[in-house]
Amino acid sequence: MTSRGSKVTARPSSEARAVARTQTLIKGTGGIGTVRKTTLPGGLRVVTETLPSVRSATFGIWAHVGSRDETPSLNGATHYLEHLLFKGTGRRSALDISAAIDAVGGEMNAFTAKEYTCYYARVLDTDLPLAIDVVCDMLTGSLIVEEDVDVERGAILEEIAMTEDDPGDCVHDLFAHTMFGDNALGRPVLGTVDTVNALTADRIRRFYKKHYDPTHLVVACAGNVDHNKVVRQVRAAFEKAGALKDPAAQPIAPRAGSRTIRTFGKVELLGRKTEQAHVVLGMPGLARTDERRWAMGVLNTALGGGMSSRLFQEVREKRGLAYSVYSYTSGFADCGLFGVYAGCRPSQVHDVLRICRDELDQVAADGLTDDEIARAIGQLRGSTVLGLEDTGALMNRIGKSELCWGEQMSVDDMLAKIAAVTPDEVRSVARDILGRRPSLSVIGPLKDKQAARLHDAVA
Image (cartoon, rainbow, N blue to C red; front, side, top):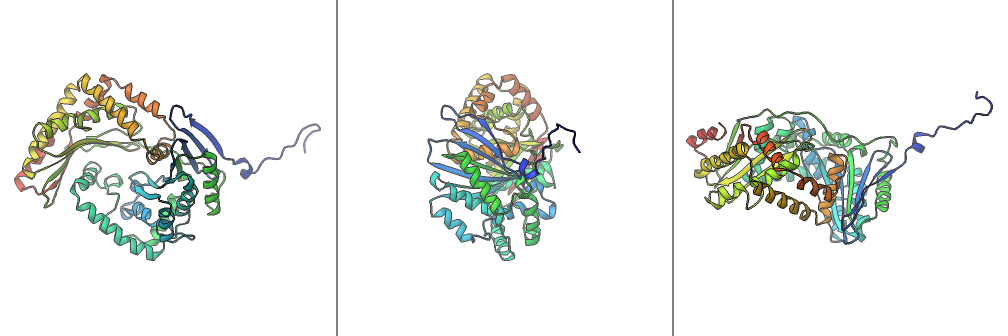
């Protein structure tokens, strides 16, 4: 009973309280697109970047699942599932899916990484509703039947064989194993012949239901798009599939953790009858959330990011010991890798490793010159902008940013971060990262005496 004069207000139901929340994250100016985000009831996030000056649109759905989320017996399940979502839904066969996008001259594909998976289609802006319908149908209505699992198993085994036939690619999987060991980050994204052969339709279906909940997904769309129309079409597609079941559900937070890599001085050799020896010399790097990543990017560019880089000049230009030599960084939620790759004749492998190690040691001790740092900053700023010149790259940027960081950064802010890197910051991160004892992965036809000397490179 209420006292006289008081007002009784009915408490709204959870369905009534759960409304779509829309924010403008980046206001487009001077050719930079406007980025908006809507969180739908059910926890599904929709992020768009609108560029009225283009005639294409790329639509993608990012899933917060990668090979890192697999147990040893499930190794390869995320990638297997990526294949199976193209095999048919309750509304479309595999042919219907591919034919729908082909008929409008579009492109459709997907990729699996260690911490996320992405499915996307790039089409003319007028065909965006079709792309949204097809990709959403794939993500919400996949059948995953036994027959398709058996057929696709053969294709995946061929993909594994193809990768193993490319030692320049395979050596990076070996390096991940060298650094992380036999755990989720150290295992290959594709899985192995044994784990792929052991996966069943039932296990993959359970994996699908667990990791493809709307709270684990980010929808990203870039190009000549209208944010509100995209939101309405996505919401209609997910509601039609019955995927937005809990209106009060909230998106999961970006992946976090506090992993420390303690692998130093380890050597792994995989003997193969190849014409070249393929090597990766490296050490622990930085997590993708580490604020020093901007300085690390400048360091990586100066060391092995282009034709004027130290490693390219010393190994290829001055001595002709390798055709391909470069450095790279990989950042995960809680850790990272830095590596130097080179492919060379087996007889030259020790010379190449000695030069690479000497350069890393020298930069760790003395740092880079101011001229090298200034040139690397300019190169990194230019490549950042040039790498975002198509709608597919823009979709990747906003989708990954929302999934991995939970926020968006404008291109201007990114360029400002790079430009603000100081020589002292680069030298500091060089001491911290390059000053560690490296580990080494090698694939090639090395003889016993050559193999025995590999430990000299990490001593």
